[in-house]
Length: 121
Image 1 (cartoon, one colour):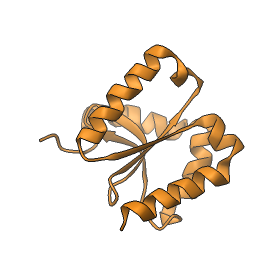
Image 2 (cartoon, one colour; image 1 turned 135 degrees about the vertical axis):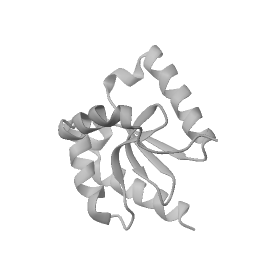
Image 3 (tube, rainbow, N blue to C red; image 1 turned 180 degrees about the vertical axis):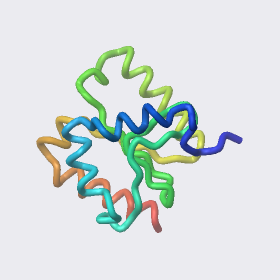
Image 4 (cartoon, rainbow, N blue to C red; image 1 turned 90 degrees about the vertical axis):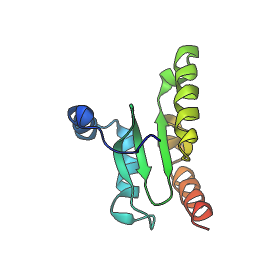
């Protein structure tokens, strides 16, 4: 069975991604950090060969923020493979487009909170 953990070989990349977040990731992180949602989230967390944007270990919940390039066919295929793999590990994956985080921030936060409550039942 594959273990879920931060691979040492990805440490520098994860660190760089945390230091240089895109605007919408930073905005969302400010809402998720310090258990403001009632759950502990980690950002730029390594799960096997992937680095996910946000991860809640307690709920096994992955939150991904997709940019404009994720609508392209090649990116979309890659996202589907990635999501299928993460789900095969028993994880719930929820994706949001960065434009939704920017334009509908409260709706995205409310959606994440609802998912958390649903998974915690």
